[in-house]
Amino acid sequence: QPPGAMSGADQPLLPQNRAGKGGCCSDPSNNPTGAIVAAIVATLGSFMFGFNLGFTSPALPSLEWGSDAVFTDCTEWNVGNDGGYTCKESVQGAFWSAIINFGAMAGAFTGGPVADAVGRKYAVILSGIPLAIGWLWLAFDTVYLNLLVARFLTGFGMGMVTPSINVFIPEISPKSLRGTLGSMFQLNLTIGILVVYVLGDYLTTPVTVTPSMNPTNPKNYKTALDHAECNWRLLAMVGCGVSVLMMVGMLFFPESPEYLISMAQKCEDEEKKSALEDRAIYALHFYRGAGY
Image (cartoon, rainbow, N blue to C red):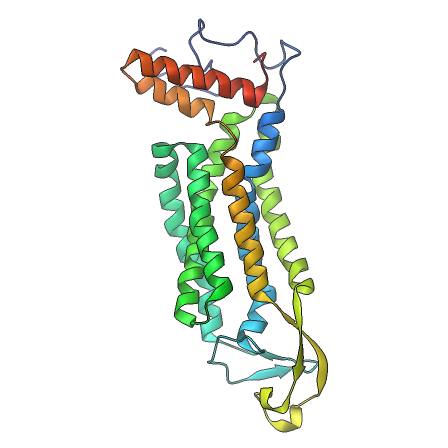
């Protein structure tokens, strides 16, 4: 490659004597099924991004008041038609909701270097670790400071998975599907927000509101035997489960062929270089079809 030339997406990944038989459309055996399935599994990470963003909407009222409340700083309340109460303003709740942004910033700075160091596939897998730990921690802890740490961890994983996915998918996609598969990140993010809203309405626990649960003046008390309280711990378990599913699912896919070739180009040992090129050929065939 001449000095100063750019290495574009259309440049051949392999030397001509190691490349496959054809390009994107020259062989009927081209099959992008591997890339499509891998993109679906990888973007479970962006699904968790949206799930994390939307989690506070159904969970926050139950964290502020109810049978499993954690926040204790609320002094002004609204009473609902079903006898439940919602906090007008909670500093603890606001900070707990916002702390994922600090985690996401830290994770975003980490995701790129990790993807370069260990590969795109394993960067996605590693990003699932803080996600799974954070969600599991949320599901079982009762101490406010611990829940802050757990929420930070989910934000860290959220930030880390973003650059990893957005590098992995373009590198495994055939040219004809690169834009379509790349858009799955945003699509699954919005689906994650929608799903957590819907689950928040269905994963509920019936609560009998008693006078002792009334945080305001007794004249505002309403008897309710069917107040539906969001089971935010069960909702957090769903987040943990999806994070684990992403990690396990990614283990079944080969590394990005472009990453393997970049490693081969830096390798001075001819035997290791040849092995990396063989892995890249396998990955190309897996993601784009045997004729690629």
